[in-house]
Length: 131
Image (cartoon, rainbow, N blue to C red; front, side, top):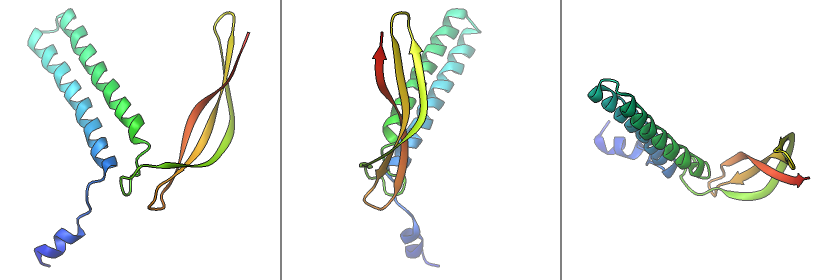
């Protein structure tokens, strides 16, 4: 098999794959920085707290990227668009904070890509606030 055939079989990196790799790298960098600070200071409480803060910031950034990445197609890397179809799950939650109650429901929305890929994304929708 020649080198030309090997190059043709290789799939290009999609935006979804690139963002997933970035998420993993950010978390790993946070973990490495945490252990470097821990080892360099010998377990000083202030340094451990600073390392934990750095790790938490890295995890928060990775979660933010992951939430944005869920609207990218894993097959072609395109942006998923809403089809307008949704399904109510009946999964209600109520949050009471003294003088008012907020009721929400988890709703599943259908998203589609131009390549034909379909994905169901679940979102929490606020129904109303009652006093």
